[in-house]
Image (cartoon, rainbow, N blue to C red; front, top):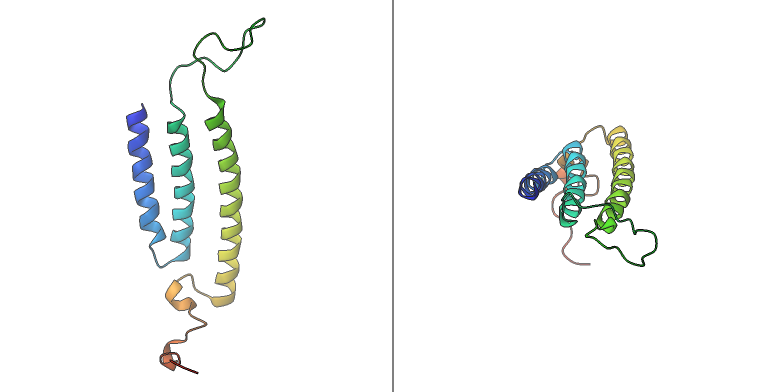
Length: 125
């Protein structure tokens, strides 16, 4: 199972990097979304998947008597899901406002600071 999750995670990383290298903002946003999911799967896989008992300590003892699952990766994944969703939502709104103002989602068409017809910037002052 861990091998399959590692392969899926590697594919997600590859597709995310491919989408992040695109010229269109929507593809970049989808790449960021896939990258967040790949990181979450990496944390999940690092937490050792297996049929281990929940981390409950029996009454009357101070430590667990059997092998128990580690709850830390699960807590990290839940936190990462919330953070990545809020980050993606913020970027989606930012991209929508940019599209409304500029009328394009192509990064080459968003060159307001460096217009195409003006030549190179000055080399000295």
